[in-house]
Image (cartoon, rainbow, N blue to C red):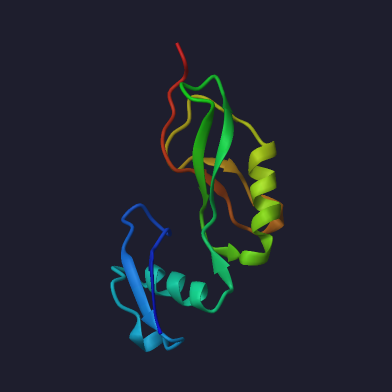
Length: 119
């Protein structure tokens, strides 16, 4: 079986694929991080989480965010809950850390885009 996905580790968004669970069959990644990303996806160990965090004073009510590194899939709901219960304050730069060391994982939640202050 061939598994294909879009890598979320960086903004490039490579379309990576793997056949079965053999790491030697990984293709499409432009860097080693993409290969590691899809291998962990197939093995069910981790994923880069994406979501939307409320933002105060921004031109929109929520800002898209993602984790800076893949996290174990079983933490998904807890981390998304933490994101939804937090609040960023505009202005925000793309890549800015909005939650440091989320749930003690050593991974940060970062802004996926910049957000200007309203007005």
